[in-house]
Every structure is written in structure tokens, then in C-alpha cells.
Image (cartoon, rainbow, N blue to C red; front, side):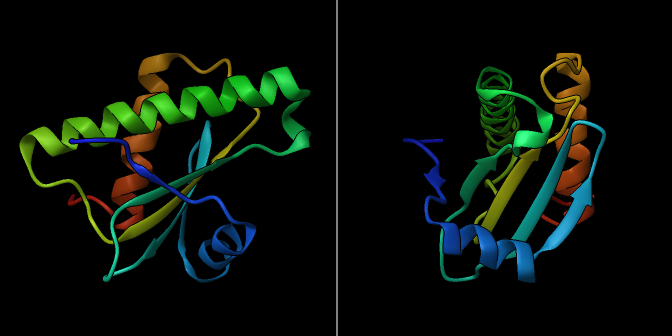
Length: 119
């Protein structure tokens, strides 16, 4: 994929995806996905204070960012990356400690369940 992925940065963008989007929960993450036919794929990442202090939250978000980068890049190799979606990845308690292969599998499963990627 050329360049960086677009990001959701404003609170109102996160709230719009949360209120109108599809949700898919996995042991290590929650995915919220909202189709946006007019725009590119945009990603947002968040972790609540419930999962721990700043160090734990930042580690969880870093893992989610890297998992999204690798998963979406591998999708782009086989086919066009999914365009026209706003995606929010929410860290859960197990995100920081989840084995890497299971975290990637959780993300791929959530993307399929939300309809972002084909079955």
C-alpha cells in the first residue's frame, strides 16, 4: 500500500462510527466499522482506562496499529485493500498479552464479521 493509512482523529468521527457502525467483538479487540462510500479507508485506535495505566494502554494501541498495518497490507497484496470504510479498533484487557498470531487472527475474524473483507 503506498503511503500511510488515513486516520480518524476527531472525537466526533469516533462517535459517528460507534453510533452507526457495525460491531464485531473478539477476545483481544472490538472492531467498529462504518461504510463510507465516498472516502478512503480510515482507521482509529482507542483504549479505555479500564484496561490499565498509560503504559499498558499505549502498548495495546501500538499492537493494534501494527496488527492493522500488517493485516491490511496482506489484503492489499492479494486484492485491492478495502476502501470506503471508517474502522475503530478498541483494545480490551487481553490485547497487550495476547499471543501475536491470535491477535492477528482476531483482527481478521472481526474484519470478516463486520463485512469489511470478503468471507
